[in-house]
Length: 310
Image (cartoon, rainbow, N blue to C red; front, side, top):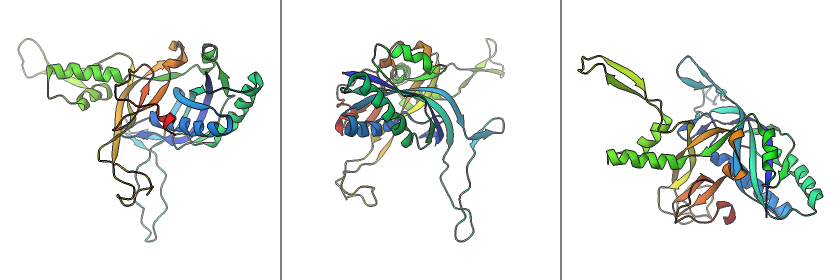
């Protein structure tokens, strides 16, 4: 038995705006990590498990400024060192954002409507004690718990907003199309067709006279498409505990990993027909873990949900 938990209009301050090679919005791994942390606490207190998370964005404000072309992050200055010099630091982009999270909840909620009321009150406090994408939650409207059938009635309270959907299958299709024309094409080339602003030069007239006209190249698909960081992939053997020095945990096997990227689409919340369209979930393989949307077909070598492994 499953229900829907809605955390409406979460206001977050100083969240991370950088995710690997992308910036402007937190990685989808941040939202699934928040869901995972919340799930572990609900398992202890109510015997409930959260498995999927959907993201609807209402407002966003990156802490960046522009001179007209390039953007730079507005950063705080670090304290001086003992020598009176400026300490070196890695640039950390921050942003304010307002989002609504839609989560799938598995398990039986005891005591009917009274139990649902108690769960909503518990979540109202618990959700604001956690960090989201490294930012602090400063405000949250009333938490709602409903069935899948009644989700559409609550969706109107999440407007205006844009839902983030997984479109990584479009990336795979585009990559195969490019590879059919050029076997040397790499996946990065296909991903940049979605992520980069591209212009192509076209010769004027039938005979080239040295004059060219630059035209904007459309993305492979229509829509508000954005590049996304969608997980982590192993790039080294799995080392035994303690074999690699200076690791965070000396009792857990260790491997080196790199970020995995995909493509997402921002869609108006009014176009969502059912909650399943929103859900992102963890998928694990022998080489890493990936965040995927509900509509993405599963691979043959996929394991169980990441949440089920804890």
